[in-house]
Image (cartoon, rainbow, N blue to C red; front, side, top):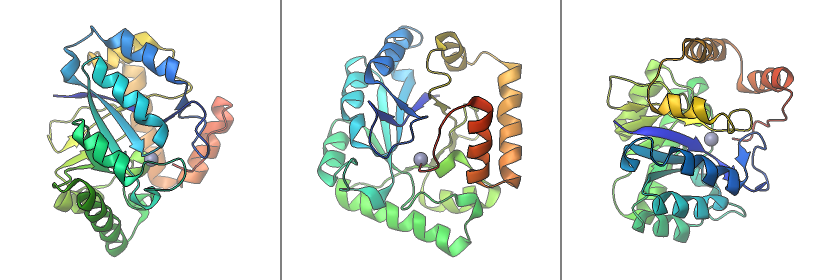
Length: 237
Ligand SMILES: [Zn+2]
């Protein structure tokens, strides 16, 4: 089973969420710290949204022997600050697993079935036109999913990635630990998650967040989180 860490953007990428944007040197330090933890090919470094600033980060991960996965918001391809179709092809040729992160980054758990199918099929087609092989990975925007979302998404994608480090018996679902401003220095915490050590406090926090997000909107959740953590996360991606 792969263990996945999730990153978004680097070095204050313009229009990126500052909460998820890390310096490239902090990123490199994390990878060096986990380099000898497991076999490096058991760990996959995943990147969501498709910012151009991930390009050197992907190369660095490969240099240390990690696998990589990049999930792209396809309406942003070729837009300033985002990957171009040429970049995507280059990443694919470097053996990065290319995945979809929807077409317009809508919250799937709140979308009607026909709109959800559109998000899935348009994005899959655009990526397959670029890399010319079937795209199997889908990363769910905002990490949210319901039974129905999962069922529909799985019609088009065989691997569904979420943004919580939950490990599933179901091989079609993969959890990831999202690295951001409030946990990137907690290297022991990151190591323990990768090693699968149980952290009861953290597991219950994840489950209560998932439950809470069923009842409130992403915007409200984000503003609540900002107040509690005194951060300035935006709701772009
Ligand atoms: Zn996203």
